[in-house]
Length: 581
Image (cartoon, rainbow, N blue to C red; front, side, top):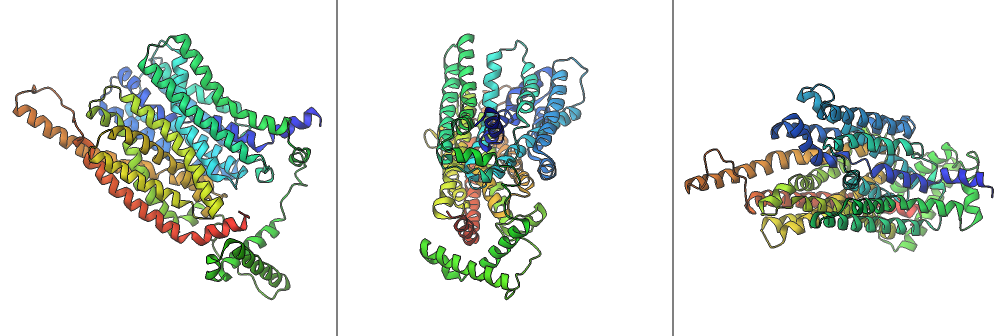
């Protein structure tokens, strides 16, 4: 086959889209860098901690509100959505850099909050564009796709920090400049590659091994980055060695490009490549009317199927379902049965956001996510102070640990939840219930003040919090369809900041301040504290009650997830038996 045809196949290959989406995500976690740039802004602008906290709220809101990109993905090409995100990122953080570097006059705090909101909101366009295009290209591998992409988003802060360390800018404000320019350059370079390419017609026998290769790279990348961070923290490392280590990190991030390269330029069989080059008219799915008919028959099948069918062994169950489906097709074709047209879709079909908002399953998942994911984000936001209260000086080690295990949790959550639905046709939310009960135990472990609690908390909360963001988007796409996936996903992203707003902003901070005040009064009574000196809380008492409360909330989330599992058993059995899995 001529080179031109292979190049065309390469640019239309769904694995290239997936790899480009990984690169988009690997530099789109702008919000994760706020902890690094906020001290720069605080010093340059002379802000107090309350003013910095207001900037943090603006960042959280910008990172969570993504309704517009969800809608735009339905009506515009993906590259337009990504480019809007680039403009927002560059404009918002570009102006912040000019202000912090004193290249333009200082602006009021409220306007700086607006700029940070706009800049961080660009991240929602990056996430939505990458997820929507890749999930549409891999509709039968949603767990791995969402897990890997969300994992790279979680790891992006560490990747960008390492790149900044290599460049070694003399001015601290240059970190803000890199946040404005770095993602904009990378995403502009690959935005035309990120798009739906009819990937559901490109399934190959080698896809399983390609996913395993990608998982291997993810594990190596996480281990490598953790080793690099610890080495740079514990030892004196020369700038040349930092450069070499960073180049190794970039090579690992670029390595997945070998998958589409091998699949296209060294194909296992000629027929696979020729299939990917067929003209669009020859590769079309059955007519829309035919698809509508199949969907309606599927819905009728769910209604007409006797309940005892689900209890039969898999071979017998599939035989009975196929027989009933054939009878329905024949009856509909002969006009003996009038297929009912419903006003709204069923679970497993395509919902709009408004249609999903009136469904109990959607709200059960959302509330469960508020309780569990909000608890996880509260730990992430307060981990520095938690480690300080226990007497650890190098708090950033724990912050880096929870970030890396957040990445691993997202990858693992996608992998194991996919095995559940593929091998057993069992509801994916059961994996969410499992991680929530683990998180409840870990939070209880910390609240009891047992040895090594901060290490257990950093590792396990990172894994469990990350797993949520691989499991939930995939489950939502299965229960409520892909047509409005962007809008559905971005509504769910409100869950974490909504939970954190209450758990961190009210419960954790209130208890911390109360315990710190109690310790201050005891110290004053012992004449060990000057009147103008400020004490912080020390000991496990600072966060033990907070973690105990969040442990109870995670148990409630676990119960809600089990309710969803019970309600969706038949839906998942029908979806994955219908798919032949």
